[in-house]
Structure formats: structure tokens, C-alpha cells
Length: 150
Image 1 (tube, rainbow, N blue to C red):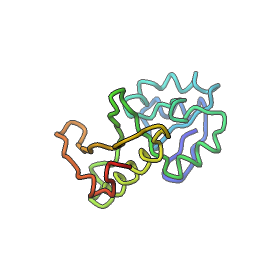
Image 2 (spheres, helix red, strand yellow):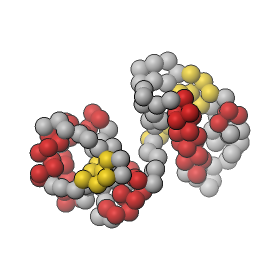
Image 3 (cartoon, rainbow, N blue to C red):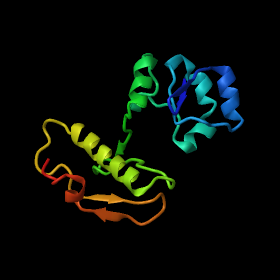
């Protein structure tokens, strides 16, 4: 199942054929485990765009209704390295300053909510933001409403 801007696109082989031709007009791809054979063939098209369904982020599930509801509700996806570095997309070149700031705050709130109960001390030590291949810019923790001692 694929969804785009509040609209649902549902399909199997027919939709896979459209996507394989390069027509990708959606933001998130959600699939059931039995459909991963069909979706797997689209790996070369969906993978580089970060749209390949993944069970770790909840886009491969039998509960498609809940996954779509979460996706439409603004579920934030991020990945964490062993060293504790968090990677996430917070905007596109077409976004204005206010939209990016709101997305950064939403990401930080999500990271803080995902904090393990046993974590002690400063949970967020520093924040940097960068374009895909650009230099990182440091952001003051106070400016996003976090003191670091969350």
C-alpha cells in the first residue's frame, strides 16, 4: 500500500508495474509481509529514495490500517548509530525556515520520548543540522527548547 498527501494508493502487481517505470508519486510505502516479494523487485527504484518498506520502522506489517494511521499522523522516522548519532530528514529545499524549525523540534521531541527509562545524565549533548552533502551547523540546545539534561 502506498500513500501520498492524504490519499491512499492501493495495489499489488499493477501498482508495482507503474512504480517500476519510475512513477513515484507518494511519500511512504507500506506493505504486508506476503507482498514483500512484489515490493522486493522494486528495490532499485524505492531503495535510493528511502521508500523501501522495512519491518524495523513499521512499514512492513499485517496491521496496515494502523501503519497508515501512524504515517498520516506524522510518525517521525530516524535511525541511530552505535555511537548515539541520530540521522533523520527534517525538510526539503522547498521548505521555508519555519517549516524546518518545526520539523527539528518535532524530531527532538520524538527522540526525547524514545529515551530509555534507564538513561541517566544529559541525553542530548549537541545538535547539528546539514544539507545532504553540506557542512554541519551547530544548533544551541536552548533554541529548540532542550537543555540537554532531559
